[in-house]
Image (cartoon, rainbow, N blue to C red; front, side, top):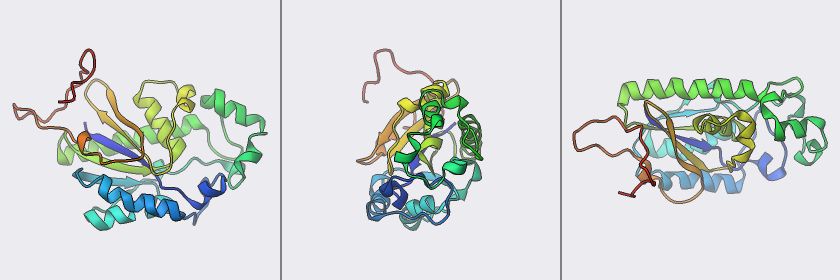
Length: 232
């Protein structure tokens, strides 16, 4: 099983306006977001990407555009990594939604939250985790168990995948912060996923690339050293 970089799309015009874009088509990156997207090329220069997967929404396409140009790797578009269908909440200002009764449910009991005329967060997690596992199997079958690949998706979608990787109930996913343009990294092993990075917004990610074992084995260990890693 491989290593996946979970990239939240760079900052969009909706992020800047503090509105809930949801699946609204045509939401582009703002100036800050375009700079974040350009920075990805340098941050990932030391990472041999075996594959790219993205949400079908424009802001994810624009986020990956500089990386696609630099690497020549064409992304696979995955509908199950699309933004949450927020239903009638879509397009509203966050300051307006805070007063909705459902807001408190989303904050304290997200597994029970279903957006009016939209989908529930439990449904989101189920589709997103299944998609990540499916693409991880595909990519590692093609490139081996030291493969590193990247997906570009949305805040709540990525948080739900991270909660699953951490073995947390979905009701704890509001403890996770995922900023626009940030990268989190999960290594899937035979026995458990391991979180290598969370909400990383700066520097290169070369250290997350699995090292070949002296024996030549390519399978990353499922064990975590007692007392923590040594940094070797």
